Length: 97
Image 1 (tube, one colour):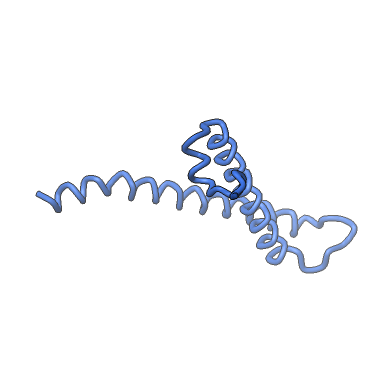
Image 2: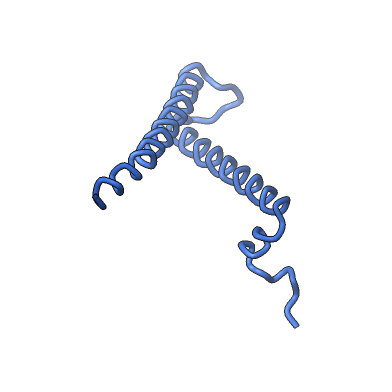
């Protein structure tokens, strides 16, 4: 006899809207955490030559710039993907005609 907890998430999602929403929220949280972790690692490697008891002004400026560029780049990619997705139905319709 198979336990209900071993069912694929997709079958559970279809039967329980609250579970589906919970999974979506948790997935978003995980993505944000991974993004922050990646950004922290990237900016740390780029900006922190000699970690010390205080953050010097050069490292602080570098970290701020690194984070801002990372956010700008992420936003650019999201916007570009949205543009591509919006344009797709147009292209698929024009190709079928």
